Amino acid sequence: MTRQSFLRAMQWMPERSFRNRLRKELEMSAHEMVKSPAPAGFTAVTAYPVLPRGTAEAFLTFVEQAFGAENTMRVPRPDGSLMHAEIRMSGCVLECGESNEQFAPAPVCLHYYVPDVDAAYQAALKAGAESLYEPTSRPYGDREAGVRDVAGNSWFLATHQGEHYIMEPLRSLTPYIMANGAARLIEFLKEGLGAEAIYVGSSPEGRIPHAKIRIGDTVLEFSDASPQWPATPVGLHYYVEDADAACERAVAAGGELISPPRDQPYGERSGTVKDPSGNSWYIAQLLQPR
Image (cartoon, rainbow, N blue to C red):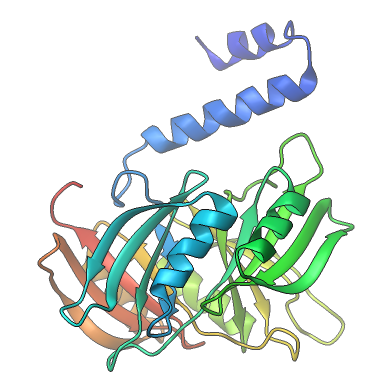
């Protein structure tokens, strides 16, 4: 079916909201069929919170009870702490591991769209989260609330008040980075990681209150840090076609090479680059499908 004939057929469907939902689902399905350097089910960029030692069990229980998440992979260290876990929730993946001598705790901020933010907020509190702010309707069309989980990660829970509960072009789960010098960080991402700026806001004080940046098939959100939301350097797993070339480009743009790319026993070639705002990018290339 051509695009023109598809659009003509949609004109006969009874409800505009149904047509828009169907179109969004079809577009997302077509997008997922495009070859991606990431493993099946992953997007190019995945948030990777480093949990404080001893909090992994409580965190995994929290996301299951509060949001219905499913822990699909769990790899312990010899001492019993959590080396790596993969969590699937609302069609997205979240990775995590516990801190050790090499990796200090690094909580993340996550923008999580749900069908009913009021219900999700109450479920999060019941599962042990701390309230940051109660559900509130915002002028940009979201009803949102904030909580902090048992491992120190902040969740901006939201329901978009339009025809779909997720605001385009976001997915259900989006990393949100608070940075000192967001403008500089965005330029680094454009030059060093091939990112595209979708939206960059401004304020009279010269701050960036909000920005959306696309990297591969993933949109990330940013803002300049503030007293209420201080800078919190995070970990991000970034899948590419060529890890060596991607690390070289990131370093040439001003990133700091923490570890050079090398083949890993779990089927990836990966290296780590720290960006000008202190965020760690785990740049990875799949060596074999998974």
